[in-house]
Image (tube, rainbow, N blue to C red; front, side):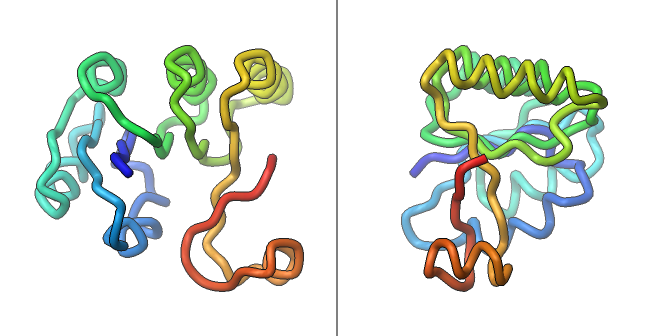
Length: 141
């Protein structure tokens, strides 16, 4: 699976990196408008670094995107991956207010895309619901 990391300077990104080294996952592109952590992360995965998430989305053919970034920019980033029908995980809180989050969810439902919340298990509630423990897994929003 070819994966992109959008806005890699977000403080939650390091929590995902070890799991992204799993067999079958290839981080092919990283964006980092802040230009703080992206270069090191791109080097770790031998992937292409972009200073713009939108340029990354225009140039790369990815199977899945992890969307991070500033809360105020997340609705626009979510819309960009939804428009391209790229399955994705959107870091919480997905916006700065409930209307932004609701709009992203409604856009996603209309596109038949795969809006998912990715969790690092074990989380008791999720583990009970999915029967899975450890690693990165998706559960419905």
